[in-house]
Image 1 (cartoon, one colour):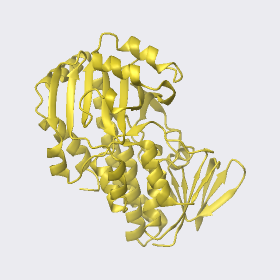
Image 2: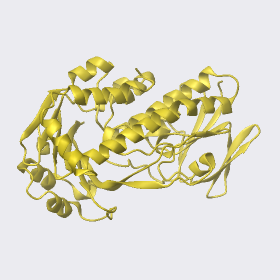
Image 3: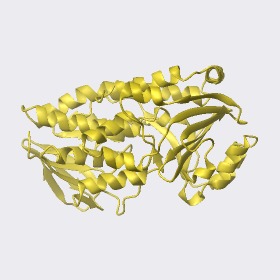
Image 4: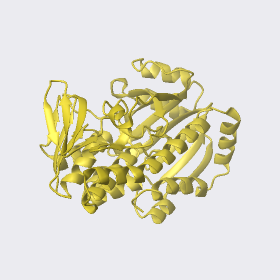
Length: 384
C-alpha cells in the first residue's frame, strides 16, 4: 500500500521516526502535537545498536554518527570509587554489527525534524479518534476534524488515544525510584570521557556516558513514593549521596539545576493489542518501560520501521497491516517491560539480598554476562 494519508499524533522521538519511515515509503504524513514549542523530554538517550540500525535503514546513519557519543568501555565502581569491573564494548559491536551512540535528545530530535520537514503542526491537542468504514478522523481540542487513512498514536505515556485502542484506561505503576538527569562537561565525567561509568551502592546509581560535547548523567534514588519533580536537585543529591566518592561530589557540583530533568519512574503492565481498526499505538503510548535496559527510545524506533514495513508489504488493507504489526510488537514490548522492571528491582533494592548479590557479581564480572544481556535486548528485535 502506498499514497496513504497518515496522521501521527505526537512529535516525540517515536512519532518523528515513524513520520520519516512512512514518508520514505511513499505516504503522505501530517504530524500534530499538543505542545506549542517542541522541547526534548529528558537530556539524553541511550541509543543502543538496534536504534542506530533503524536510523541507518532510514538513511540517517551518518547524521546520528556525527552527533553520537563515542562510548568505548563500561566501568562499574562502588560508592567510594573502588573498581568493580571495567571492560571494552568492542565485543558487543562485533556481535551486533553496529555501535551504540548515546545522544543528546535535542540532537536526535533536530535530525528527525530536519528529515520530516514542514509536516509538523504544533498546538493541536488530540481529544478523540473515530474509525470510519473508509478512513479515520482525529478531533482536536479546538474542534478541528482531521481525516486520514490511518492514525499513529505516538502521544506518550499519558496517551489520550490509548483508551480507545485498548478499550480501557491503563494504570501506570511507580517502579520505585526517582531519577535526575542532564548534561555536564567532560570535566565532570565519573571516569574516562569515552567510558560509560556507573557508581553503585546503597541501592542507588550514578552514571555518566559520552554525548556530543559533554556527558549525559543520571542519578537514581529509590523512594517509597514518587517525589515532587520541582525540588532543587543539588541539595537533594548532596543529601542522598553524602559519603560517596569525590567524583560523585564533583558531578553534583557541576550540574546545572535549571537544565536538570527530574522524574519518578513509572511503567505499566504489557498491553495485549496495539491496534484497533485504522488506529495504532507506538512508543510509550504502547509500552512505557522503566529505562533500566536503555531500550525505551529504541523500541519506539523499531515500531516505526516495522509499521512502515507492514504498510508496504501487505495489500489486504490498513487494518490488516496494523493487526500484523501489533501481533509482532506486543510480545517484543512485553519482554522488554518485564526485563526492565526486573532489572530496576534488582538495581534499586526491591529485594536487598538480590541487590547485594548483584554488587558481588559486578566485582567478578569480566564483561561477558553484561554484554550478553545487552545483546539479548538488541538481537531480539527486527534489526539483527
